[in-house]
Length: 127
Image (cartoon, rainbow, N blue to C red):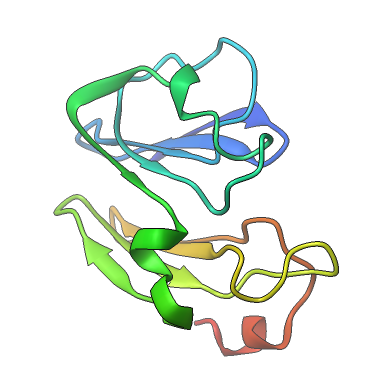
């Protein structure tokens, strides 16, 4: 069963059935109890990218907009246990190409993580 550990603000961890851990937008605190296999950063602001706080596996990947949202494109990556699709995330303080949200496919689930966004028109197309 997929497990969720909420850290506060926009920060959380998800663990797959096989204990494969994804940390999303690390922010603050010392409750990063699981060793991450993957760290997702929606955008580079102090309240979303404190990767240094996260315990992680040696082969942990850190994925940020430079990797999944280059040149205005929204890409996806398959990590075996988890597939990550970048999706639009923006608001009055974060321009359209500044960051991204995520759709994760794991354990037969599809999970939308909005990043730092307002309600945007692209959300209606998410399935």
